[in-house]
Image (cartoon, rainbow, N blue to C red):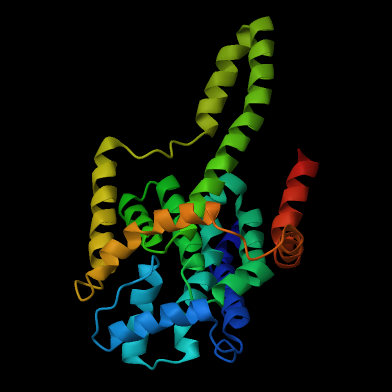
Length: 294
């Protein structure tokens, strides 16, 4: 990417953000809330009214939405406001990985995030699913860039977002194992070639070390990250100690996720496949592109 493109890169990310806002906020409050959305929104309304209800396992969405209910109004639009804003901010996530995937592809990915049907649909739902995805990616991006305190803050917000966080961690874990397996094959081939040609082994090792930046936090950086995570859980999970029930609510997210593995599904496998194809063309396109490129 040339210098002139880099000069406008920040503005292009903000343009992607504006496009994402448009897709997510058009007629946002027109449709009535579903039963699951209404359950969470009602808990947020009770908190806004000064009550202390038992909270579901998505305290991040409930507590943040209660602020807008108290300050603005308790409408369908306000019930979906937090997911729409946070979901729009997802376009900034590729920026934190631009050194890995290069600036131009990262910028293209930001615009694809803005218009992806699946991400738009998640951002228009009154729950914490999109919050978990965005905060998890932001925490990962901050971690890679060795920004300890923001990484801890976003990790704490992700923990408050509900059971979807654990699904995201599960998928990221499988992805990491897959990528490590793919990288092991060329590494084994390289080691075999190095054994045949010892003179090139030291040169290849130096080149590899120079190309792989140190993205791990040091021991001294772990402490502020953990401290930021704990403070975020305490303040965000209790709405600055106005709703202490949030602390117990986020602890129930993992059991709720595990129960989803044994509970009956409300959709048939055929419907799930059809929904995946309809709502995730971006994921399918990127997966096919990666396979074709090897």
